[in-house]
Length: 466
Image (cartoon, rainbow, N blue to C red; front, side):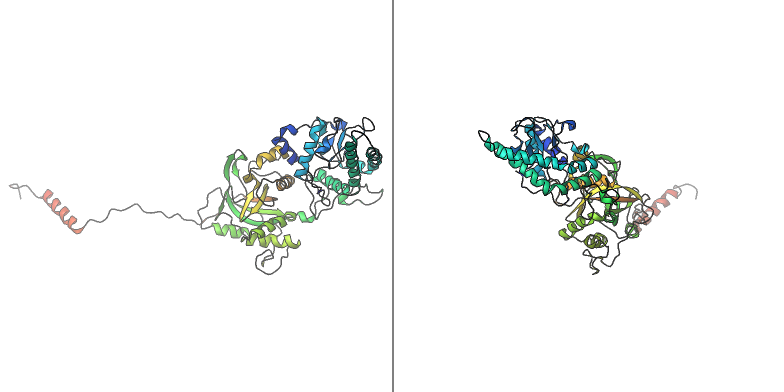
């Protein structure tokens, strides 16, 4: 049953990955066949909606905080619609269970149809919903007879709808507007779009547009440099690639050893110089969006592991956003005596994006958590020939999706970008070669024996000429 924990301030949680997974696990719940053209005008904007459902009115048995009934077929008889979208996995399960009784009249493709102007228009005309729900809830609350309890519950659903119109729905829809534009949840530092249209002649802020502008907090912060060896990989839950490239400690080899981070490119190259470096090894830089650095740093601190480079570069930014750190020089998340470099070193090429999470000293990739196949199915998010995601938007979606699952490692998943320097790593390594083994010297008496044998061979035969 739903626990009534609804919509955080301005937050939006995408229920579709959870819904698709539930339908895969419980295919009998897949009763979605409603058409957008037949949707009930009383549905709140969002991915789920009721269209031409049946009139048995059973959906509230499983989803009383999401499904309500109309009076389409008479004063006490009607179809079902969605008055509150789900905002967590438990609510999503409740709603899917309630939609089961709609006999194919519900749908979950609202994201493909709702637009910012359409959402704003619905909100502007919400008075129509309010007037209807007020009249019908009053009528149903006075119903008598055999089905009295049913109509009392139906009236309660409409009263809950009216309360939601006043408290909660506006913030949800502002978050939904952001989602429609960005296909990711908003971050705390970002402004949400407005539901009301700007007055004629009034200035329009970025938050009023269909696609909010990315704030400065989304800038990329170089987290550190490392040397790694791309490797071929294949598997039932992995992409097929001959040169998998990742900052994770799990899937490819790092030099000088796994998990080794460097503050500058020069430090990384110097550390590798005395080693025997394979020709395919390359230098990489990992960069993290500033608005995701806090989660990464929090997991490092919670693990109590020694990551001086990562904490020095990201810790101050995660704490106060200005890159200054605490200035105590101890490498615990303050400046550590370092000033974070605003850009990666010159000469590298942007390679792609991945999704990472830090867990007790290891940097995990979403690929090593068996998420690849599900992400392709649920999000349509595929990787390139290096096993990397094509852009930040896709990486943001995968990270948000992974954080909403309950079957991954207990980490904060975050998007990250890789830069590569496509030149072999210089090495001063000289292999130690052994000379061919020499036979041991003959003992002195062996030389005397050899000399006696030679004398006999050259001496003239007895009786012959002198």
